[in-house]
Length: 425
Image (cartoon, rainbow, N blue to C red; front, side, top):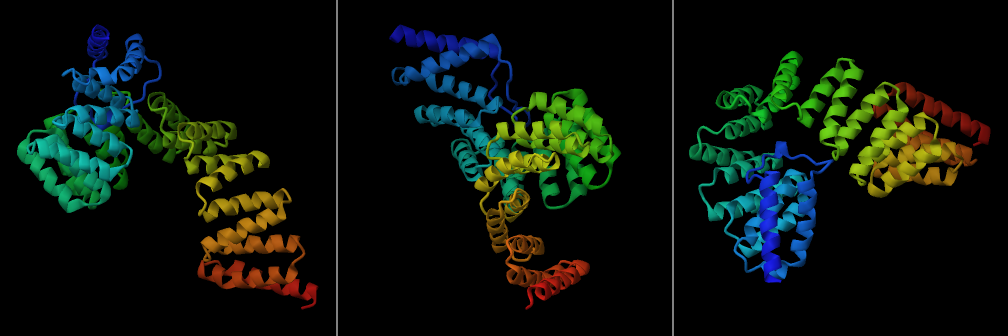
């Protein structure tokens, strides 16, 4: 077994070198891999073999480093859960690895597990109090959480440790953007680019700020410069697509989203945004396909299920629409709007009791929305429960007035009066 274990470790080390695994991984360079190289596929098999031998290799001093580098590979490919497991095993064997703590923190941050991320960056700083990377990523996580004063303090500490680092200048720009100071944000982004004209994050966030400021042409310039440096930036492509979409150039927007999704095919939000553009073009089949791919990327993405359902309603495929909205309602049980949409389908299909239950539940979740109650009244009319319908319409009247819809309020009162006259009450 000993020789076999050593052979596996040696082979993994060689393959990792051939694949080109790096220690420092910037989040914007994390991308899933569609077609894997022969070396990468062989590494998968070797990793499985390594797992089976784990008890035998714990004493080998190379093992923590090998596991760390394997984890880095998974992190770079966006397999965050797998990367975290490998970092934990590696750190369990040797906890004195600040870069492993930092990279595990990055993985947690990508999963939006911010408390765990901050704990990892704190562990890195406990080992190496002068680690500028740990300060930077701790600050970025604190910005995510809105802990701005502490974020700024950690950015300043990173600047003290490494004053010529473009990423910390970019991070300070993000801080100013987060507190609403776009002038200060642009200043620090430009400083980052002065240090490193290839700082992709600075270009991307400058473009976002220009869009907020209504400076669309400046945003395009920033994104095009960024894409000239690296044409395979999915979010830069998507942001440029959104600009063209807002300008009405929907075909160009779709093309840019297609390029972005070749690179980042596992992001449900990119698929949803592509679907929205197809929907605006009234390309219902293409929209439904994009929403379906968003569901495949994340089966718990409620927005994708809802939008797919609404698209099916537009094509009059109510049975499929109902299936989508059933799933959405199961995933988001306290979302009144989903129940409302499903209730309308049930009413159209003649499932009146189910429709009534959905409208009742929707109104119980948001008693300020008159549409929920109005549609409840329509179902009660269908069921012949006229007095109940009239009462519901009467309650709708002040709700519509409060919502700034006085004409609809008057209609509700007139409808209620008409129902009562028919009913003889």
